[in-house]
Image (cartoon, rainbow, N blue to C red; front, side, top):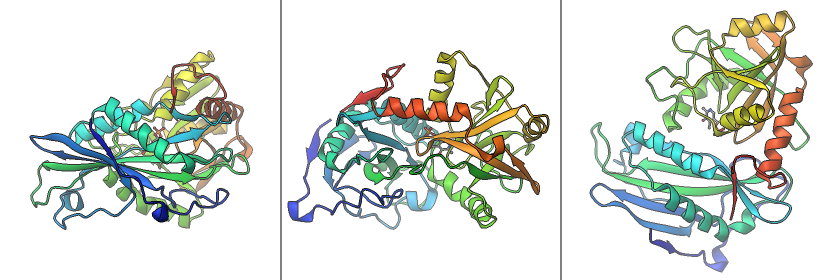
Length: 355
Ligand SMILES: *Cc1c(COP(=O)(O)O)cnc(C)c1O
């Protein structure tokens, strides 16, 4: 891949945001990676350029038929000043699975990773050093061909933008209150719930807004057919600790195969704990809470790593988990994964690469 590099002019470099008030997804760095695809020609014109607006035809197919897919990953600045990436090839491979499902072109994984590392080297000064703060990486692919009519587009744009983000838990864990909806559904088997495509998130907004208006942080989705079996939370997979068993819903095609989910499964197996991927109904969870065997619930995802669940609200009832406190396993997993991501602890499965 021939990568053109156009550096931002010194007087046009963006001012760096206050490291202690980054928030999430509000600031973007000086450069971005772009690459174009044309049917018959393949990927071409890969470039790192100053962060700037795109020019899109109003008929660009993504605006009408939603061929849009993305990823979410992070770069971590270690205490040793090395920059670490956590399982980055898994993200690009997942983007390729999303692309395949929407009849979009495959990306060359190794070359995209090399170009991403080049981009990170150029914007290295943007990677925050505050504990827990990171550089969020957003690879995205959209259909740019100007045409109406539902079919796969013949032209695409792939781009990567970078956003410095603050620590998810500046003052320690904050267990979340979750609303279990049986009014809306997120995905059906055979649909697109197992890929990161823009429309899934548009479709989820109304349930999230209603839950927030009622005082909850996130929505827990149930299966679309029986509205009984647990699927996942907003942008997190979910785990339950019941008795001696750690349970997470299986990848049945309607939930997102999280890389954090997979890492948690591998780690707890390394620790000799029993983890099962099986269907679990909301009634089973509530019954386990009743008989005292429900110990912990936590979500997993790149943004928060581990998100302890303090309570579930289902059909007018509140179910408080572990007295609303962070469980021991949640804490252990969070500490372990963070230590691996920041290069403090040696990664058990070659999960970490550095710039
Ligand atoms: C991104 C995402 C996750 C978590 O995936 P990670 O790879 O762990 O970040 C879970 N569910 C949904 C719907 C997501 O979009």
